[in-house]
Length: 160
Image 1 (tube, rainbow, N blue to C red):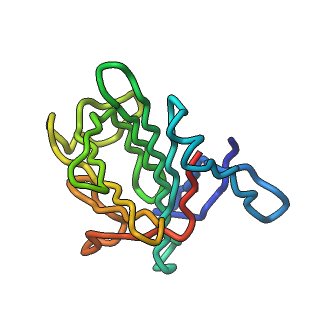
Image 2: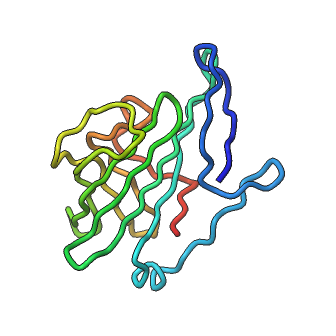
């Protein structure tokens, strides 16, 4: 992992931890696992971002990383959201909320988290597998970069 300097915000340089490997001026996509490989893996990571058009002073970016771990007593996840005015580090319980959906329910904050906005059991977000094999993000208490966005199909989703 490296650092990418994104720009200025209120006179301070905003840094974003890259969640992908860097090549010269380009991202090198991480290897995408097949469904069979993901089903046998103990941890599966979903990674995507949101970018808002440049505004006064800076471009707004949020990078989401959701690592789901399987255990005998159920699944849990760590959720990291970094970027524009954001450093969110959470632990969540994972459970199926509909036929093709998994929900992430808040359990606790992890070190480095900036704001305490959630209470135990809050539905943070859901991931839904669509018929075209894409994954839709359904925001709950964890909010999108866009104030009114409730659903999002990321173009840069990586599953490892």
